[in-house]
Image (tube, rainbow, N blue to C red; front, side, top):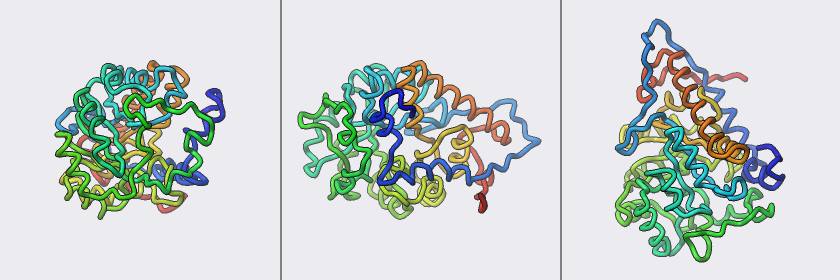
Amino acid sequence: MPDTLGPGVAHYFRAGGDTGSTVALNAAAWQRWSLVPRVLRDVSTVDPSVDLLGQTMASPILVAPMSGLNNVHPEAEVELARGATTAGVTFCLTSGSSRTVEDVAGAAGPYLQQLYVWDDRERVLPFVDRAVTAGARAFVLTVDSPPQAAFYGFRARVFGLTPVDSPHFADGPPAGSPANLIASDIAWLAERSGVPVLVKGVLHPDDAVAAVDAGAAGIIVSNHGGRQIDGSITTAEALPDIAEAVAQRVPVLVDGGVRQAEDVVRALALGAAAVLLGRPLAWALGHGGADAVAAVLSRLQYGVVAQLALCGVTSASDVPRDLVRWRSWG
């Protein structure tokens, strides 16, 4: 993100955990999966839609939950939701938003609600009820941000960003995952909310299996955009094993380093049902509002259709595994 939004804002959205090495590796790892296109296929019609949580989505792209957007645009999450809606893309709202769930839902329609919880789980329930009433069709429970990670330099308070005046929590939203978060909390949240729960922040296939066994309706392969553990496995590396472990039971989504249409197609070939896009949309929001967000998403959607056709694939929901091959060099 260019510094035209101010060095603190730019650093916040660029930075990662500690040195930030995993941020760069996330993007680079997708390039290690070489596409192996097929030819002599009838690609006169290419269907980019996918089915997720009982809904047909126009494309396999979602907006990732992001905080700090009040420093990027005065309308923050509402403006981002407007852009996503224009492009026909499903929106996931952070629980650390600066705008109310009602305002965002009014711009986004049915949406996904990211959630952190406190050690005292009951404290978050009024917000859970409020989000469901506003139109949250599922919760995205983030599980990879324990309190010990709070010192990392991307945290907004370190760089003097405008803090979020939370419209939902009197003492501010939960800052991350509680240290005592366990698999049984998934079923608790699903039962209490009455909507599906996706678990975000999974990098090991055994953890994915445990989450699904505990009631997760989906898995999001994520290393928090490289903002937690430097040196961790990238999402492009983690995705295939997790998809093999649970994709026959629940949808698997992925984020981290997705920058172009080829990356989306690679993710689909590796077993993802959809991808989530974050940083590029924060940049677009800050430099052109909803129109720029819609333009980025529309261009990416068009690119996915083009890449599928170039690879001889006619459906985003049926991309074969042998379309990609891990490149051992470069």
